Image 1 (tube, rainbow, N blue to C red):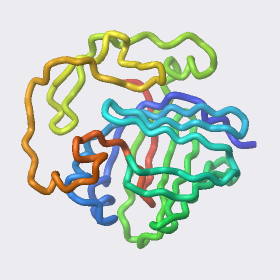
Image 2 (cartoon, rainbow, N blue to C red; image 1 turned 60 degrees about the vertical axis):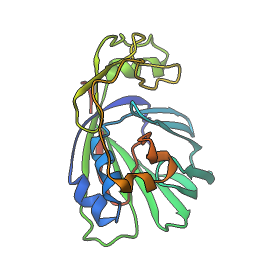
Image 3 (tube, one colour; image 1 turned 90 degrees about the vertical axis):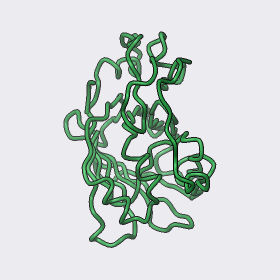
Image 4 (cartoon, rainbow, N blue to C red; image 1 turned 90 degrees about the horizontal axis):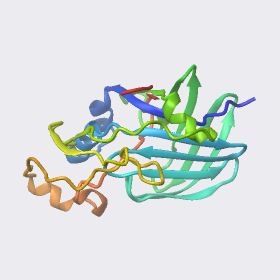
Amino acid sequence: MPPNLTGYYRFVSQKNLEDYLQALNINLALRKIALLLKPDKEINHRGNHMTVKTLSTFRNYVLEFEVGVEFEEDLGIVDGRKCQTIVTWEEEQLVCVQKGEVPNRGWRHWLEGETLYLEPESNKSPETPKEHERWEEDRAASGHLQGEPDPPTRAGSRGCCFLCGQQGALLSAAGARDPSNSFILSPAPPTHTHQFPDQMLSLPRPYSSFNSNWSTHPRMEQMVTGGR
């Protein structure tokens, strides 16, 4: 019987991501953004209906689907693609297949203990470097998904610049959560600015203002762990 993946998973670490993205011909600017984003995952699993939220302070991505039913997925805010997607179970692994202009893309999720793994797949060469990321379930944050009270807020904690890591803003006094459980920044004055090369001006619209989100790419292996 497939496991229930419901839970809130906190990002922990990554390795080989830059080499992996370079092998997929992802441009330098987007690679740098991907390296700096450390998103969380929230999964709500009810029977065959699933909602998977990838959450960061800059852009969230929500995937909602019925297991075994093909649907159109709009990845415009991720990498500009639209595709026909189907998600099925292979024993205890949740497997996604995406059909579109970039063939043979997809991913697979599975649990080992309280650790959630993600391995994206593609038609790239077996020599493509594997990227490895880790998250763990945050049981306190997972409680509200099971009908328990919301976890304590983190009002007043500091936010970091996603380009250099420097402290840059305060998280909202509401515990950095909006009604959809997204992390947000309060309107605090910026502490510093960055200048970007001309090539940034030619980025697709979702990236031109750095409203970027985490993107899974084929053959990238990821793990998801808890607590910050």
